[in-house]
Length: 193
Image (cartoon, rainbow, N blue to C red; front, side):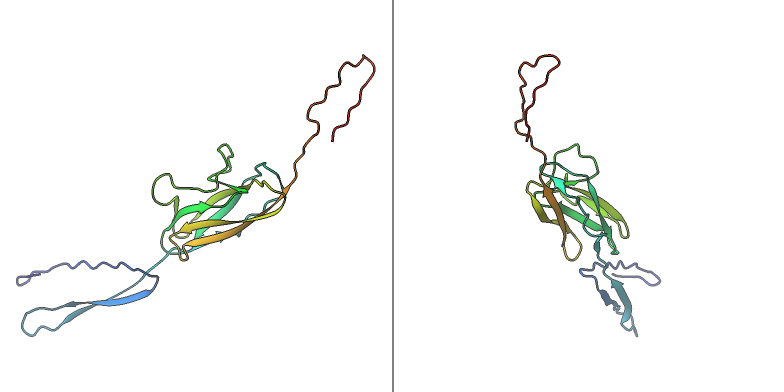
């Protein structure tokens, strides 16, 4: 930069941290004026990151009938960091459904993919975002699956273990009963198991 006598110049200094650390630095300004010394501007800053916390841990599910979707439970994602939290995917293998709300009008999904490239949702520092999960077991006894949340936090994957007990539903045999002709005032009996 060339300055005439009494002119001033603005220097733009940008801080782009690549880690959550305290960083120091300096800008040295040198000139060719007589008797001029190295002018130093001390710089400091702290890189910030998001911190993903699952409030209350994993939701608890009551025993659930096979192949029937149960009540949706809320899982709350909180950002306890100082930078925006970007969540890129939320996924769980079979046996559970993920939803954006408590409505169960759409088919059961095992992931919440973004509608467009980028994050599914962003959580501001100190804010919370709900994800709704319901159990839909297809097998008897205790079932455990890991729900995985991928984000820009460190670590980039957060795992929450979900558990439900699949219980047998009701099945009738035979499913059709024909009493045939029965006279008025009398009765007929059949056995259903």
